[in-house]
Length: 371
Image (cartoon, rainbow, N blue to C red; front, side, top):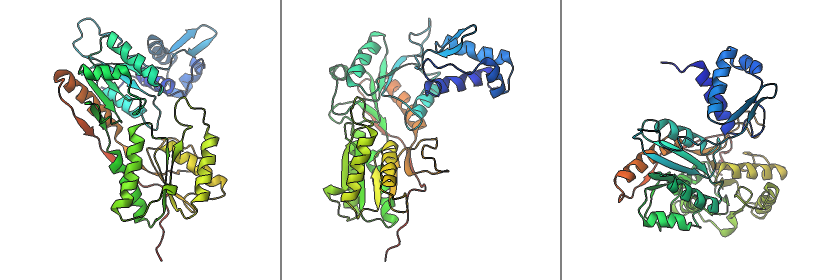
């Protein structure tokens, strides 16, 4: 059976609100305009709006219009009477179209007949994360899926839950010192594949540019890029590595401009580099801006590779994409639900699952013909 039109419109508007296309306190287009946008009747729009209002995402007032009053999902905060589905907490640092939104969407879809999900967002703040863990336990969740804010700082609450063998699954992070379950990709292996792709294209001198490695994911990617050099008998020096960018790290005073200046200095001091390995898409954007400010171009002067990619054109270039690693976010969401449910039934199991990833060639890598 096909989805009713009003539910399709509801789902579309809800996703736009959650992804900040329509921001907090912003007014949605009038119903009359929405009927034209979606080519439906006013009754269909009203039904969709009623659902958004039930979700406490919007406020509707006569002559004042429809206003966004909430942009977070809190699904099934308590189990409905007679429900037999386990209540699972899910704490994510944040989510966007680059990484997180697809995990969240697919996790919610896949879990519909398996668990009730209560979502919380830590914004990468370890103290808030600790409070949210405490809050979820007090609400009676049977297990928690957690994308940790940091791999360096382990909150006392997380340590307490691990010591009590509370069902936990870590997402996209490894904490080797803790006996915890986890789901993600093999970041070291994926980083190796990106660097080896550059070697195959004739690049010999490759720079490594990342954020400060506060999470294991970034450190694994740095280690993987270095391992690729060792495995392929290439020399890599310390001046080929810049791992001090901060503008994308939560609760930092560093700005994008600060990081671009760092990258420009790095590129000037390493003038024999022909390619840059970056730990994530946002870093690739900063590197691209720095390259252009130096009156150079991608890929003509510098090739760039990264992890993940925005679905939207953020560069102003037609159909430009970086060569990048795609993480199977559907599989990450699915595996995290399956694993937390197994952990609830078998508290002593410890499983670390690697989801698939794929290298996607883009327009950011130039082939260098060896002389």
